[in-house]
Length: 381
Ligand SMILES: Cc1cc2nc3c(=O)[nH]c(=O)nc-3n(C[C@H](O)[C@H](O)[C@H](O)COP(=O)(O)OP(=O)(O)OC[C@H]3O[C@@H](n4cnc5c(N)ncnc54)[C@H](O)[C@@H]3O)c2cc1C
Image 1 (cartoon, rainbow, N blue to C red):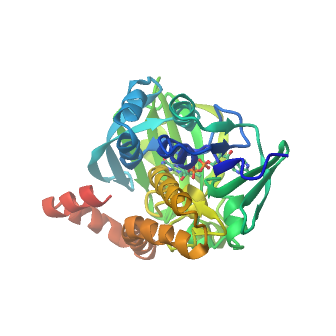
Image 2 (tube, rainbow, N blue to C red):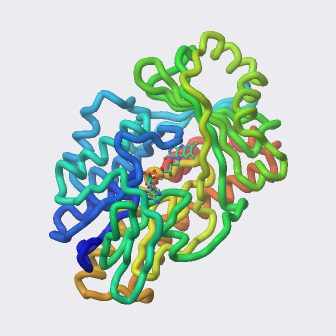
């Protein structure tokens, strides 16, 4: 058993949100523990598209962090995304911020390596947390190896978050949740290393298919959909992924010599289409635990990293004034929603509009090619 208040801050989960929170505490002079049930490198089911926002957060923390990541050879620079409707109509977007594709097994390990080399964080891997008890005196985090005590906990433990359940008991709301599957494939023809591709077909709406390039001729392909639609239509996502390719003459041809590496894996996406409670009981939530996935694109890494940093900043403020009550921590809810809420709401409306009126999508794509509209979309999406 650990001594009381062994740590000032405990971070649960060493994914993008948790590692970023630890990096943000680099100069805080605090006793910080980072706990994860996995040993790293560990995989996370994902599309492996690292949004520009994530790299921007890294650069803001320290330019050398972003420079170090840029030097690695496990990623590709992506500069544009191509949307293809029914194999016939297409729209291309240039990204404003530099973005990458990188297998999560490599990306998350690179982030954690920054934490271990640049911070004093006590990294405890292979440490599953089974229970969290929050009292007026602190937070007790129960693991098989003993109980870790902290003044405050940053919960970055993903979409099935134990920390979130310690804060609010909620069942998954399928309207604000998504499901997706992904597979690794080699040998797809006509891939461009700087371009991600999104395919949409009317019969598979509101789902979409992605094909993202990876180093060494590989690709991450996948299919995702809102959970309510999955349940209502009894969609089997693994079958839908294969059917999507089979029903697209263009993809069928491009996948002629494709080789599937490993199986098809699935996981949930907690969408940021509504505001949820992210603080209280000496706990601050970040990343998927705080339900921040973009409901339009399925991107969650950028918001995870941003919220990890913001939660770390709020935790430092709480420690400075030695105040951990819900009213003080609530400022984090407001700051986070002020920062991300507008964009998440806008994307939610776009996603719902497309789902309700799929026939208008080809017209929308034409409209999006008008230069001022295109400029606005580049800035917003
Ligand atoms: C199929 C799919 C495709 C996606 N594609 C993209 C994409 O291309 N781009 C993008 O930006 N986003 C994508 N996302 C979303 C993205 O994966 C998540 O938003 C992102 O991983 C959130 O990071 P996080 O740090 O909050 O959580 P996670 O990455 O899930 O990390 C949580 C960590 O907590 C640990 N943990 C959990 N429970 C415990 C416990 N009890 N004890 C100890 N440790 C624990 C886990 O081991 C894990 O390391 C996709 C999601 C899915 C499902």
